[in-house]
Image (cartoon, helix red, strand yellow):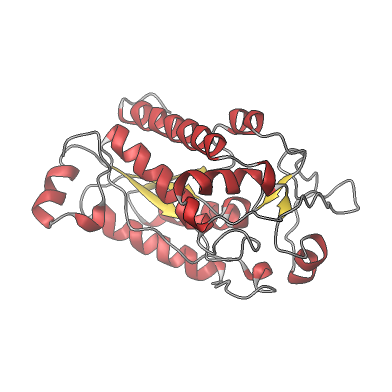
Length: 260
């Protein structure tokens, strides 16, 4: 497979797949949720974003992109119509089974591009532990809010970055502008009253907590936290490009044995 365009697992025949896997033991697996993102964004934001990033990385590195995992734990968003949540145990089992299959073809490195970010990071870490114990593979978790975080934050002007905010809105403007509708959307800078807790990526919580449906309704009556109106497609493109570049650099170091 020539570089310059993404290598999509689901579009290949088995002979084509055989050729791809002869040249790499690494794959990309986008993981995202199906959940509400305010009135201005679609339910698939956390899927669209990691899929786009994975395709960019694949085009740069030649590493194939697996079909995305579209359902993860997100029960706290079920206070709005449309969210589909599964239990952590189900997600872990699915990911371990995927790794079991991939090891049959010589895959050893699975890079999870996590679009649900803090919503399933802990579950992905638990899955990574089981994968290490039960398969010949290893998970590397690339959360889209952690990779190139300093650069992404520097692009944004909003003081609060939480959910369906400037970051996600800008990225969606770059990926699927037809699905973005920010007319009349105003900033929501609400935060938990406690100085220990935060839903703002600019100010991390000092105590880990998981929001409930009731928490979300109180903090985000319209389903978002931050200022979507500050987003532009140019900001989104800059963020996506920087994140993809960093993951591509990691893959090159991984293949050259320069990571561990």
